[in-house]
Length: 359
Image (cartoon, rainbow, N blue to C red; front, side, top):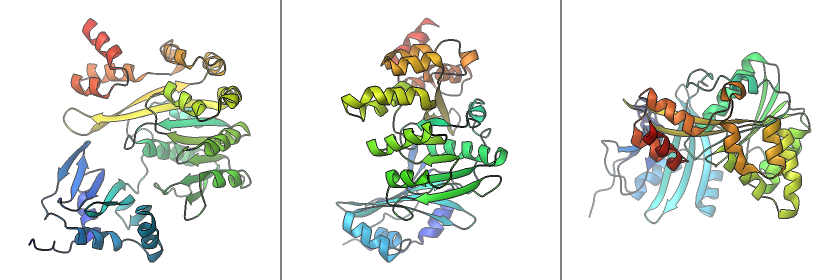
């Protein structure tokens, strides 16, 4: 019979994990704690955790209300902050072995747009008075960080009322020039669509929607973007054209023409991100950027989304648009990533391979 795992102080563990500059911590029964560095999981030199040890660590961080919710649904999302260390976005879930936990590290200090080499056009996009800006990509692609950096730019250059609706709240913004009202779904509001409905009565200039996950939320976001507000939102799509299709496809066939018209007039930009390992260590982000202009608006309105990609390739110096393939080729030329990484990460690998073969 195996010995029980010695008690581990979860707060001390989280503090020590941050020293490795990792993005995530995983606690799963039957495994030692593991952290994610440069997109790869690495086990820590600690004892294998049993179910009781994980449960003790998990329950030490939550209140009775959250414990009751978790035991009822077997899923729990929340966030918390360790003083002077950082914020953590957390998910508890139940496996066949017992409770498991995933912790995402969120720095207290919000990075400025320049820190991670974001496209300079982002500083111009956030100056718009109304419209929809979408940051998309898979889980763990840095969407929240990019959005936080864009709001950080606004916070230091404009005087606006910014309402964020998140599940859970990640980056906490101080009031510098802007006034922030940050709301957490489940704690401060019922759900995204309800919060969006009432946000329009709260005199916002900017609304951030943590996730546009259903028809009602997307509908409310489009309405807000049309009525004189900047709306930031996220979706789990891997390219700008795929993002447009995802939004339109959420609606019934009879509604899609109206949604295309709304989207063509309100969309400002789609920024599609992905993270990949950088040569020599670390990660680097590609950012495919679509920015609406009359040609883009016409293609969306006329249901010719399949032509958006070719439009994004034209006159990029003038439009400030870029495709993921363009970015991957640039990174390869600068020896920032390997060819294998570029092909594996590409959302158009055949196109990229043909270009590389011709070089």
